[in-house]
Length: 286
Image 1 (cartoon, rainbow, N blue to C red):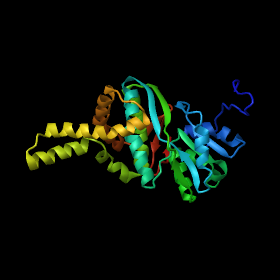
Image 2 (tube, helix red, strand yellow):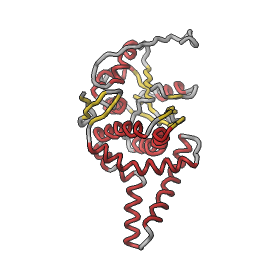
Image 3 (cartoon, rainbow, N blue to C red):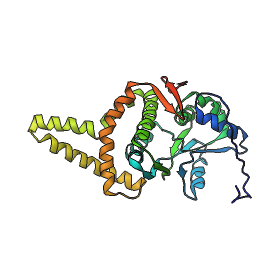
């Protein structure tokens, strides 16, 4: 604010309890006080290019577009949890987002979402989203129900991950996974088949039965080929690939199935120091 005094800027440090979602409660005051129609919601660990706002607002020139979001690129990761997080974002999550948009099932990410306040008013504004864990996903669903489209920006947005422990990664992705389970149960149930490990084990067993092919060798070859197919995504999103990336990717794939089982086992999430029960449809209860 000191650097750009000619820009009309106000800082709010306040919270209004409109529901169990702490992020929506945190944004409510500034949202209601906003003077312009375009609303950008973004997290503090996101870094963008200088033309970011110009690019995103360009999509809203089309009256049929109700919201713009972006794929998130994991960057500046530290620690085992941080590296697992980066690999997850730059492969499985990016791939899943592209697939969902292709299938006309857009998945909005709260780290980058631009929309018009007048459009959000038609579904009740962000206050109605405070009942849900995934306020970003539900905002996208609300936009679709208004007959408008959600578009995915062509360039990813960078998330600075920083230092994360394995426990941090695990708890974070239990929350994300239980969001997916509560919102789209069928897609969650078949999720392990879109990873590398379960299809690899199934293929190794089948080739051993049919051709007596060494199952261990088959599994290693399968994992290598799967990783090679991930490289274009990583290069597009991350830009660079180091030898360490393969080993972290391999570990993340090995952890994916036990993580999925942990997600499937319960329906509680820990978020910002509070514990919530997650109900079907993504509704939250303290």
